[in-house]
Length: 278
Ligand SMILES: [Fe+2]
Ligand SMILES: [Fe+2]
Image (cartoon, rainbow, N blue to C red; front, top):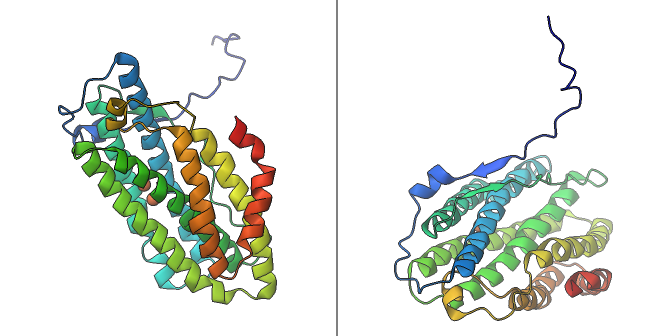
């Protein structure tokens, strides 16, 4: 028997890769009508779509986490029924984005970041925890996704990428609506104390949105229209849309649901001001 002493140190685990090369083959749009891009622009477009591919794939896991959170809370079937479709939609969106990466000449393989499990909020009753997750996922993340994708879609002339982004947008609209409908179903189950705690939770939920979304929207300066046609958008514009959506859609929606959303957003905004300056 031989003993190998050189392998005594544990190896760093290899990153998990999201590899959608096979799926992308069937999803490639015909991009022959796209205006010509310089090589750095083409690489930027590939990075944009590869980033979307990863985000969409992770969204499937987030919706899947809601199944457990809502089931353990005894949520009504109407608040659960559309979850399988949302999961399937997000997986398909990831494949569609992978198809664009491939059509642009890129490789639809990317490291999969560590997945954050959907929290159960065990310090409160299951129904209250489920409300928190519905707010965070359906009412916040998906509503923000709708407004940003709608703006990106408006930048595209008629063409394969407009069709593709239009399909994704329609799904995101249905996800956001489902989130708001589910909130309407669950809120009557919270008593006054639970509502007050949920209003406090909104501070963390808004702050999480800022910390999570804003760094993904880097200010890229002026984007050439040709690059805009390839689906690359100006992060600075997307940031202002992000804030507008919270202020004009999400805060009023949560207020209508009986929560003190404006105070929570004001507090979260003050807490995360530095994130916007990066
Ligand atoms: Fe999606
Ligand atoms: Fe979605």
